[in-house]
Image (cartoon, rainbow, N blue to C red; front, top):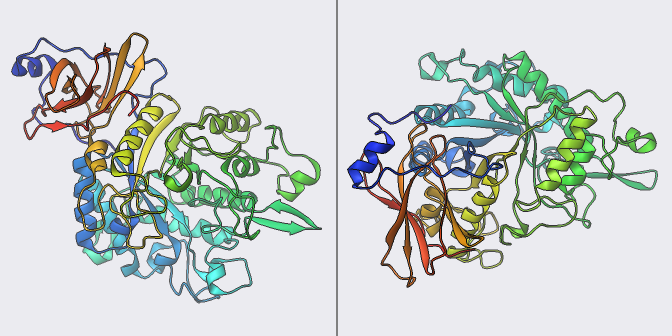
Length: 511
């Protein structure tokens, strides 16, 4: 689903005439650039875990910011009956959405309805925490929330979600009204992190080996079966949802596996991207590997602490926004060995930078957060394999130990990153000229918009228009070369359909 074109949108030449300018031209993007990237947003605290008013307010914000897609985790234990019981409820049919307490679906039903009403697409990720009765571990309830999910029960859970959001299911709580269809899915959330899936490692015969990759592989196969059983065989299904970093110390059960090592384990590849053989293959349950029929790869390309600059590459098996070539290498090897289809696109489904205030430990300055987000979007734009960029979250979390990556503070006050997200800009040197890249996120799909590229040689607030260009029709991108003029730069956009003029942040080359 894409945002609806705005009624009465003007043609580029008419826009130029209205502005008193020569007819602007759309500067061609570089050949390798991705011109059709989705803008994903995730904030389950506001969209799912808070009340209806918070959800609606947040969806309104996302629409005004120009987001295309909402990414949300469907927390298994929040819709399942008796989640702390160690035995599955008698008579419960996990594949039937009507077997779940109807009031527990309300938050997700509200999210799906609200997003669709605003022209926003959705990606749903069924994931832990899970009900204790769905765990294959004989342990406490708290351990069972992530430990060895039963693939049969997970398949049924995914099937129930698929049936509920098939476009043919009627909601009894809303007078038998039809629920919208969801057609985009991803499997689990950060399965290479012990907070979401355990055990990460196990010790067998005195040797330590990864356990989570094989467990996750069974969950992907189970999810594909559940979606097929509920009429979603042609839908988008993403593999991965991997966190960007790993660790070499800590408890074996919860020690995070670096995403490169994790994905190779899922695809039964060794460190040189060859098929696992012998004891290593047996330990990873790799016998008779059947291709995973997924349609893309999801990844969370944070830098360490959500506070290092976008240029930080992480360790050799870690994958940040500047080292995504490592992920492309794994995808290519997986396809070559018939583990996954060829040429799978990459979707960034969670990403952000923490700020100080409020996080005095990991946070970056407010100005740096805005610049880092814009630089990251530019890096993704330069890579044709990246089909979506992401922002997590809209508001900071209540717990200072949580994520403080919001575009708003907890009280709702906008950070500078709010405006920077709505209209990104990045200026870089290009030979004897400067390259000004940006995006008019709120522009309606299919409607090129006239955007002023402005400069103030003194670096103050006396901006003059250097050139006016038309944004791309699909996603509102601007990409133009200008004379290497000193000072600062910004973009200015007056919507062709009326409304207040919007300006980007002020940027210098490389900042």
